[in-house]
Length: 262
Image (cartoon, rainbow, N blue to C red; front, side, top):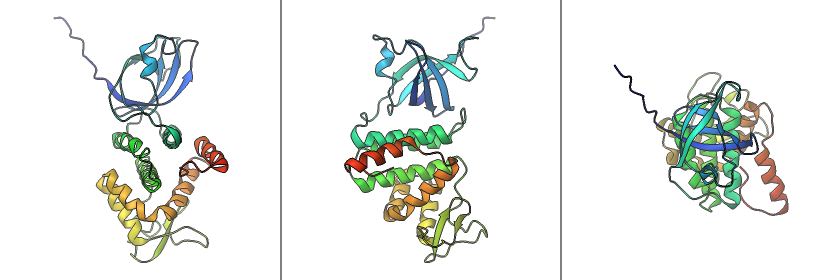
C-alpha cells in the first residue's frame, strides 16, 4: 500500500521583526494564527532577485509554509520558510501609523511566549492595523487601548474589570476605582488615574463579547484615564523594561507633534 503524503495547510502570519542571519538570509519573528509566535529562517530572502523581498514585510498578512532546519543549521526552535505569499489586506502603514504598528509588534514579541497560539489576539491585531491609519487621533488611541486590553487578557494578566480584585465584589457604578499593577481593580490612591465602576464594567463586557469595535467604543469615553493605567500595567508585566518604539515616538514628539503616543 502506498502512503499518501499529507499536504499541510499554510499558516496565516504577520512578520513582527527580521534579523540578519547571513549575507543572503534572514531570521524572522513571525506571529501566526495557528501556532503563535515562531522563529523562521528565510533562506535567500536578501538576494536582489528573491521574490520574498516584496512579501516578508511588516504589517502585511501573508500565508507561509514551514519546515524544520536540518541538523547543525540553527537552533532547534527555528523553522525554515518553504514559501510565503501575500494574503491581501490593507496598504502598508506609513508616517505616524508606522510607529504605532511597531509598538504593537514590540508588545507581542515581549509578552507572547513562542509556539503559544492566540487566534483571537491574531484577529485583533489584523483588525487593529488598518485602524491606526485613519488619521483621527481619538480613533487611533481607542484602537491602541483596545488592543492593549485584548493582549493583557489573552496572556492572562488582566484582572476581571467588573469586580474588586481583592474581595471579588461587583463594582459600584458611580464609585471610582483604579487598575493597579500589583493589586488589580482597587480603591485609587492619591494621584492615581481612576475610572467609574460603570466604565470598567462596560470594558469588561466588551472584552467578554469579543467584538473589537465594541471594545474600541467602550474605550473612547475614558481614553485619558485609561492610558496611564494600561501603561503602568504593561510596564509592570514587562519587568520594567522600556519599550524602544515608545521612546522613539517621545523623542520625535519633543521636536514636533506627529501623533498620539502609544
